[in-house]
Amino acid sequence: MRLRNIPGADEIIAASPYVIPEHADQKGRWRETFGNDQPIHIEIGMGKGKFLMTMAAQHPEINYIGIERYTSVLLRAVQKMEENPLRNLLFICMDAADLPEMFDRGEVDRIYLNFSDPWPKDRHARRRLPSREFLARYDQILRKDGWLEFKTDNRGLFDFALEELEPAGWKAQQVTYDLHNDPEMSAGNVMTEYEEKFSSKGNPICKYIIYR
Image (tube, rainbow, N blue to C red; front, side):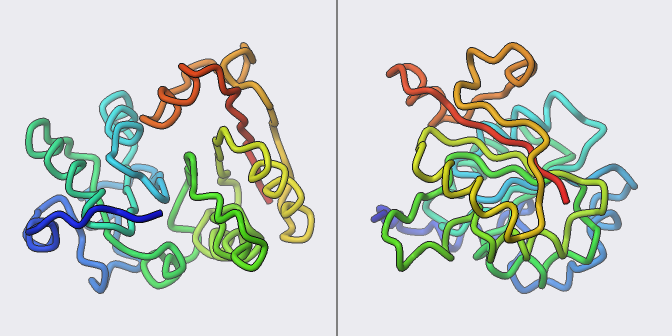
């Protein structure tokens, strides 16, 4: 996916009080950073931040961290935070492959993956966020009784994600191929920008909740 470079985005991100520097010594110190012992939920590939900002506003008793690789995308979330600050939300601009360098073992209570890049070519399978390679990384930072939620409109990616569970040592707690018509799994669902776009076109949304 080619992204438009926005002049000055890097500098704005670097100066923002809402963004933790990628190379900061944060591992094991997130509760200290937030100043409380609340659970920590992270979204990997947060885009412009609609989902996570809604979640943070609805659940002030939870600390949220949004992870986005591209400054041109994260910039919009930072601008939204400047307009409506949330004390329980922070961002990091980083590659998700480095998660174990930023979070200590068991430091994260829940992980969200929403409409991740499908990386459709077979040779790029290990780059997919629900791949066994990334599940191994999540296993390092997620607490023992924590879980991961994944949503996508891409049926091929979803089928791949389900096939990766057993080899990676994960299990499905709940699975749906049509979230918005599943009364149980859609209860309290917060939509992302992509989810609103795709569902308005009639695309069914797939979701699973997994654990180890």
